[in-house]
Image (cartoon, rainbow, N blue to C red):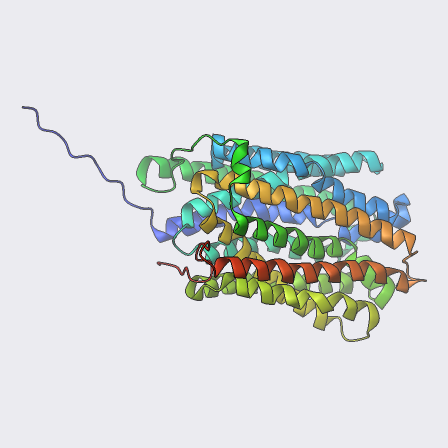
Length: 428
C-alpha cells in the first residue's frame, strides 16, 4: 500500500505580516483621502478666480457621492466576487484618473466629471480596503487595526488641510494645489500593487489571508442583515453628514465668520483630523479590551450637538469646538465600522460595507448640496457671517439624530437579539 502523505497544515501569518498588510492597504486610502479633501482649501480661490458659488463648491463634493448612492453597492458586490486585491487595484486606478481629470480644466462640468470618476473609485476602494482589513484581523485586534488604518488614511486629509501652509506658493491659483493632489493619488496605485503581491504570497503560504470561498451574493441578502446593522447604518449616515459637509465649507467659514487666514483655517480643521489620527486607534484598542461599543458611540454622538452652535453664536476659541469634534470623530468610526464585522457573515461583508457606504453617500451628497444652497440663500459671506448660522443648525440636528440611533442600537444589543457588541473583547 502506498504511504498516504499527511495534508500540510498552513500556518497563520505572523503578526508582523498582518500589520505590514494593514500599512500597505492604508497607503491606498492615504492618497484617496488627500484627493477628497483638496477642494476645501481652494474654495475661496474657486469663488474669486472661477466665479464659483457655494452651491458649485457643494456640487464638487456632492457629485463625488451621488453616483455612489448606486455604484458603491456594486463595488461591495465586486469585492465579494473578484476578491480584495483585484478590487483595490481597479478602484485605485479610477482614483488616479479622476484626480487628473479634475485639474484638466477650470470649467465646472470638467471638474465635476473628474470628481465623479474619482468618487466612483474612492468609495469602492474604501469598501475593498475595509473588507480586506476585516478578513485579516477579524477575531484579533480588529478595532485597533481599523483605528490604525484610519490614522494613516487621515494623514492624507491632514496634509491636504494644511497644504496652504506647507505648499503656500501653490495657492496663488486654483490649479497648482490640484496638481499636487494628483501626485498623492499615485499612492492609490502603489499600495494596491504591493498588497496584490502580499496577498498572492499569503494565498500560497498561509492559512488566513486567502481569498477563500465566497458564497453567492444575492440582493435579497440586503434585507437580512438584521436590525442592529440598520441602526449602525443610520448612525453612519447622520454622523458623516455632520462632519464631511462641514469640512467642505469650514475653511471658508472660518475666514468669513471668524476672520482667520486660509492657513489658520486649514490648521483649525486639521485639528479635527490630527485628533483622530491619535484617538481612533486608542479608542479602537479600548473597545477591543472592554466592549461597550454602542454606549461609546452614543457618547461620541452627544459631543457633536453643541459644537456647531458654539462656532455660530459665540466667540469661544475655535480650538474648543474643534477639539470636541475631534473626540467624536475619533471615537465613532473606531467602533462603527468594525462592529459590522461582528454582525454580518464574512462572505457578505463586502456587500454589507458597500450598502453602508452607499447610504452614507446619500447623506454626503444631500448635505453638501443643502448646505451650499443654504449658504447662498442666506447670503453667507465675510460681509454677512450670520448667513452661516442656518447651516450650523442643520449639523447640530444631525448630532441629535446620531444620539438617537446609537441609543436604539445599545437597547437592541442589550436584548435577546444582540450580537455581543457590548461584551465582545479581543482574543489577542
